[in-house]
Image (cartoon, rainbow, N blue to C red; front, side, top):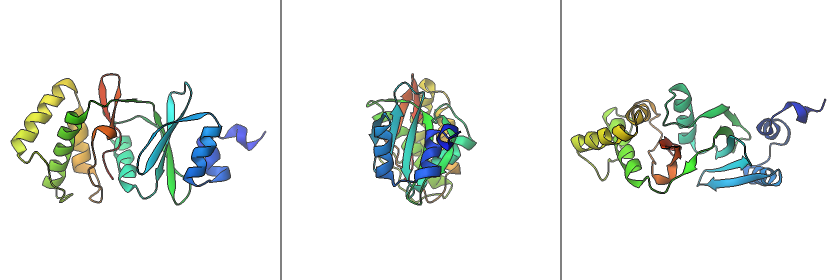
Length: 193
């Protein structure tokens, strides 16, 4: 039996070739994976009809590793579902499998509310000196979060986890590009840098 037959695709990348991230993206593309999107520190790839995608993340994005740790430790319907643990491929990047989610370009107001609530909680818990903008009034932040909770049950708890249990080195970077949808449920995908 060949070792390739035993290992999954992400394990093949980890155990055999250990390519740099750009080379891994080419390998995935040549193996039939579609690039679903990318950001400053990551890219997401999916093989047709697979229920999971593979996210490659640069090692310098410690905020994402912190988020994955929190999402696994404190499951919430507003966090992605990961399959397996984050694997270090090289000193420069990691990979993790996660559920496939849908992009929504209409989450600007919601992500601003969540971002301000998380920043407010982090500031209250002395986890950050990051400013809460544009909302600065605690009563208004709580009122808007309570309204969002009505349409997205559990979202307040998700934000509380991120706002009270994240590492002080993580910087809140939650905007419409860092949230997706699972049906009608908002899923926070990458709230920190």
